[in-house]
Image (cartoon, rainbow, N blue to C red; front, side):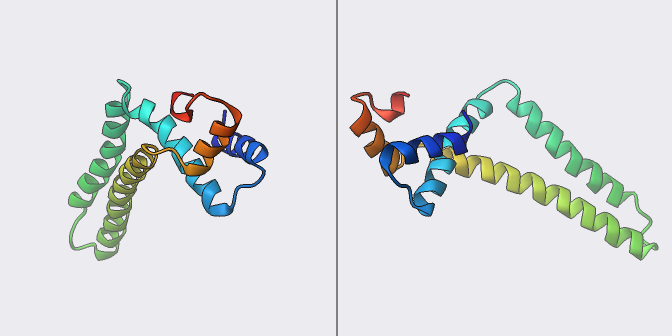
Length: 122
């Protein structure tokens, strides 16, 4: 189930979900999904591949003739962007996972009303 579908289901069960609650639930669901990904054997490979893009661009920058200022600036911009994307990607994944540790109140209340089973076990 996609996060948006789950949020719609929770909204239908609870009667209403405000935008802040919706965002919290979506982040929680994404974090739960990502937690299983980062604990898989392939996660280190994903990080290695992403880091490799940044490293390639840094190498390309280092191999650019310093006398060609426009090319140096362009190569620097690409290397900076690749490194920044990697850093932000890892931070975003980790933030989602951290956010998934605690079940949002609207989810807890909705499932407590609907079922005796705690939402953490779903």
